[in-house]
Amino acid sequence: MDKKLATLVLEDGSIYIGAAFGAETDAVFELVFNTSMTGYQEIITDPSYRGQAVLFTVSHIGNVGINLEDDESQKPQVAGVVVRALSPLISNWRASLDLAAWMAQHGVPGISGVDTRALTRKLRDGGTMKAALSTKGTPADALLQMAREWPGLDGRDMVMEVTCDEAYHWQDDDGSKWVRENAELRMQNAENSSFSILHSALNVVAYDFGIKENILRHLSAYGANVTVVPANTSAEKVLALKPDGVFLSNGPGDPAGLPYASEAVRQLIESNTPIFGICLGHQLIGRALGGETARLKFGHHGGNHPVQDLRTKQVYVTAQNHNYTVVPETLNPDEVEVTHLSLNDGSLEGIRLKHRPVYSVQFHPEAAPGPHDAHEIFEPFFEAMRERIANRD
Image 1 (cartoon, rainbow, N blue to C red):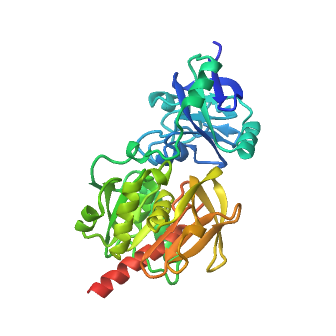
Image 2 (image 1 turned 45 degrees about the horizontal axis):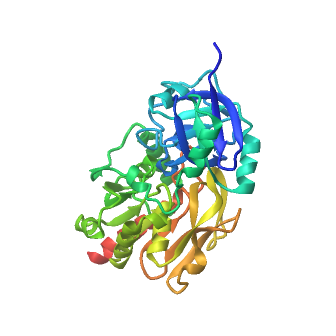
Image 3 (image 1 turned 135 degrees about the vertical axis):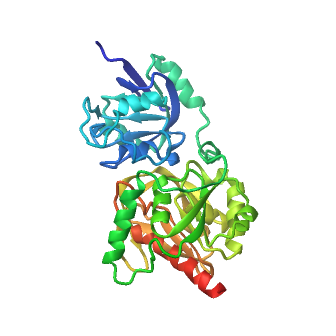
């Protein structure tokens, strides 16, 4: 039986023909490339990719199938998947089904057999592009029109498409055991850790802007009772929960499209509550402080981004997934300390406030399957919460 064809068209008119897999449908999106060598399930289920399709630079995808433990959310979040080669077989003891069947179940189309190296170079040289993909035979000229007419992500609120409907308490899931075992081992080997794992639980309110479940697993493993709240929850309602600290999650799209979130973060900062932000949460802190955000040429998507801590000169290899960045020149240096920078392009990767217990990073210290260099980034958040409790008592 002949394989069905898929057609991918970029807004510049480039056309790529390959083999279709996953769902039989049309999709329009922003196309980004990801340089991770492993973890396609975590990538595909990351809510930060809402409105985007992922081009995998690794040449071979699908060989370990899909399991029930590694999701970052309850379903695939990407609009499409582009790969060089899709494995015809799966071989992993944890797998419950194959990638193509899983994508088909959730309405996500894919295309394989395209020159992903050339396509990645095009995106690096020309920047992130809008694109359309068909796995059901839609002509290329119609796909080009779809791509060019699509409004894109700038200024849009994508967060309300992925946030939870109502507040809930996080309960450890099947994937939590891997994080908890790693955390306990790390603390056993640490001489001066401030963590008190599984003791003196702290109450953390986590904003769900598209939160990755592995972040919740880390907060729980390191001693937090976590209440997750929708993205549009007011600062007043959060403070009424009497949190020891507030976590601001990752999420999709342009932070400039979330004025309600920036205002809530501004009020929380003024309350002197300890705050930790990752990715979009970092950008929202920047905007709450009066800073500006800007689009990167082709974003940071992958598991091999070097970041330097300017205070210790330590370099972390980090996982990242974002298209926007905080512009450091727009932050007040009397109030804000720049703590981390990207060694690839010099963009801002971390800040802390000089007079309040607030800090954030652009990268993902909780990354699964890795790298794990930056797990310690959670530590100051717990230090700030315990110090606040000690001062209050």
